[in-house]
Length: 239
Length: 217
Image (tube, rainbow over all chains, first blue to last red; front, side, top):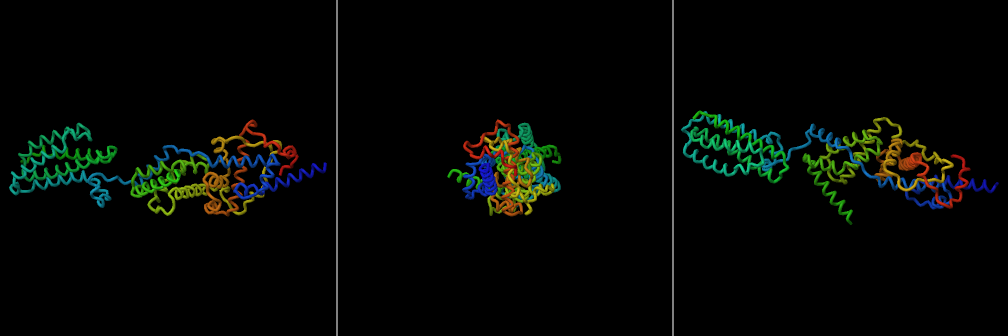
């Protein structure tokens, strides 16, 4: 009986020491008594085995994916806070410092506005002050370049109906322009030339990066502005 | 060698993305989110034990990251920087909730508490691998303070001195909380298992027969 009690007390002491040493042992410290006691005590061996299993399983724990709405919310907040800047395309790349200014990104509509302003100014200029022959010849040459630069088959990067309309209007305008006042012709020429440059640059950007939606939007916008200018020119009867 | 190469490539990739994100490139923001979302969300999920809170905190952590990204100068690894930020976001959240368990003050007496010994089942142990859902559930049931230490140490690989710095407690306190967390996890995992999922202890355990006579401590 006393032998059993001695064994039991001895086991309790071993378990107590095991409990004390276990955290340090699991931290990698040298505690020879742990392994020795575990080989003698089923309960403590089970504790040790379980804790080692939990530690290894936790370390290899797989990661979870957050739902898609998390990025959607993050993005929406960043957009609202104005974090994103539109990548520069075409002509904006050539104006690195100006490209940082928001209004420069609106250069296409600004160009069209400037074009209309030039037309208005031209209407107030004396028709005799500009050499009509030189202007007519000049725009005829540039119109040919423009037609060569923006034929229908090169306008596939925008809505084909828009491209066809612009092309048809441009053809009509070339026939119509000779009846215009030279100063008006010069103004239209300047405006159209500017828009053609924008179209060309946007189109180059789209072809380099077909997924660049911003460049594509600018391209469409430039075509629309050109259509507006051509329409205004065809409507103009102050010859 | 290959893993070293991967780490280098990843760091270079991160650094390019960071530079682009710092200039406001949306695609770079999206790529950074994509690259780190799992780690961030998992950390939030483990530390809170709640899916909805983890989503909110992931969102908050990335927003803070992107708002501060202009100040990142590369003195530390980006992932380390991000990790610290996420841990801070989660801890701030837990403290705001006023959960007393988050406090790891020096009055902790965890080491004084004995291992709970469930006699009659003392020689049975968890077997094989623990499935991740059961483990995740058990971690989620831990008190927040224990959970934080456990997640940071056993899952995220932080050292106790780092955890002590993050949680503003002593190293000894971090160690004791970790041990207590592990013991609670064990208890939860054993409770979640059917008797057939528990195995007999190692054969030859001399005192296994007598352990049923131990008094519960």
